[in-house]
Image 1 (cartoon, each protein chain N blue to C red):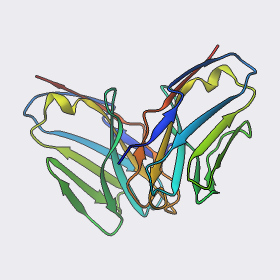
Image 2 (image 1 turned 180 degrees about the horizontal axis):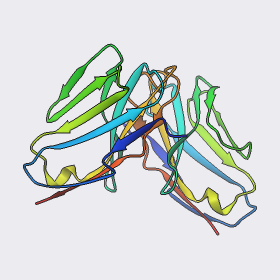
Image 3 (image 1 turned 90 degrees about the vertical axis):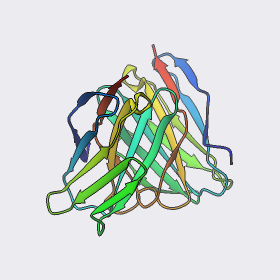
Image 4 (image 1 turned 30 degrees about the vertical axis):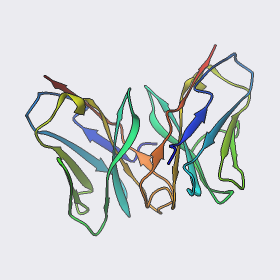
Length: 110
Length: 114
């Protein structure tokens, strides 16, 4: 069963614009991770944020976590065509397995 | 460091047959997790092994099984294949438990059941 659901399911933007994806989950978590999947590089880890953290940055990526709302968001700033991919959030409850969300398909047009 | 490798990359089987997929984790990683990815169900957790012990299992029938060897390499087996088992099977490794640290994924094995 899916623990997380991403919103929107699909997103199309122009290069240079920002892209925001949201993830909602159902039960309390220890950690939340974001992954990217494209046909060229497979599934790649982006960021891990722990339940006691509220925000984390990595390059053009910014992740926020609101445990009271059971939600997280991934912001990609100044998008590039190479950011075209599916983005998944993944949550754990007992640090021993990851449950993936349904994913957001991002298309960045040159 | 070499990445996670999975063999074979593509596999075609018929209903009723069985299949074994192999995963070699990154050197030093002790955790190996398996996932099934389909267009309808998305990424579904199958099981995780840590130091040769199965720590967790997803909601899959007993036809799905796995094991981990002392060198951390892992295999998963699917017996009595059904059409619905057609999927991309992904293996991931990490130095710690799956939920707590970054997972490194292999390219996957694409299984087609005819």
